[in-house]
Length: 396
Image 1 (tube, rainbow, N blue to C red):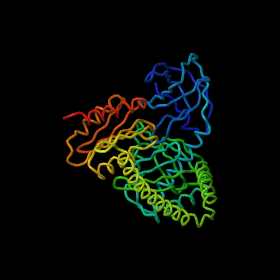
Image 2: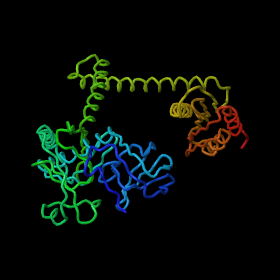
Image 3: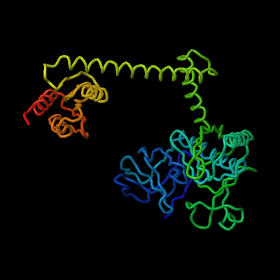
Image 4: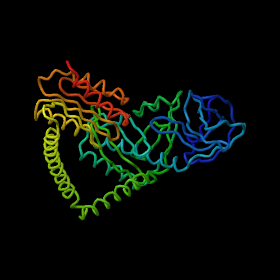
């Protein structure tokens, strides 16, 4: 049996009565096939409808060989059911999908760029074009699309044979089975085979706003939004601009310059911080060596909150300042270790580090005269360092 698809005749239908003709499981969830449905199954880049059947949430709608499979959140006992479609989602998909039709046609007109794929996402829509387009072509296509929307051209649907579609220069999509091909016609502008839900007039798309483009394979991927999504995107971006102009104490026109000045200042500050950090590490290395007993060539120290990079930097400065071994640890989000020795000393620093991180429940590595690592057992940090120092001081 083939499910009667009510949405094809009336894309505004949000409530209907139907009978269950089959029950089964789909990937571990209960599922049903009805004799008729207004639920749109995922197809041609357009996501499925959501809603309820007999009060049970519909979590997915799939097209399987002429039947529409309704995947449910829980089992459905009744044979006769009332279906309710999520109207806001249906309206959004109608706006985005028809907006895509219009924009794709506009790109063919202004750039001879054909759409090879379409994706209707949760936040934005994308089309992939078979050639790269310029910024000027991007804006020309957007302007042409919105002019067609403003003209409120009628949108109609008709069924033709495959032979008729071919005579019109159209290729039927794979979801159209048999000899019947469903055409969606934006009067005088665009005619395309499509099984999706579309409005009665181009004006219902409201607006198409292109968000950007990027190179994709041999062509361009264009990101855009239509209708209510375009308005929501405007409000979100305007809120960000308001926040930024307040933070930078400037108008929108001066925002880019203010942001650049802030980035330059941040870069200069980071450079100065690095310089001060290097100076402080040099001073700390001198202090640690000065605190060692005469004749000692091993420095062992523990710090609070130091990150691995800073710990490693201090170890390297210690062994560069005078011949010796540095065994350093830090208690931060984890227990960190950094071991180093001066050139020419005989210790196997990577092996020493590997043994030290074992009681920390972690791992580490290195080569030559430098190694580092860590683990989650902060309570074992001092023990690990003490064991490493004993191994270094042991007679050879």
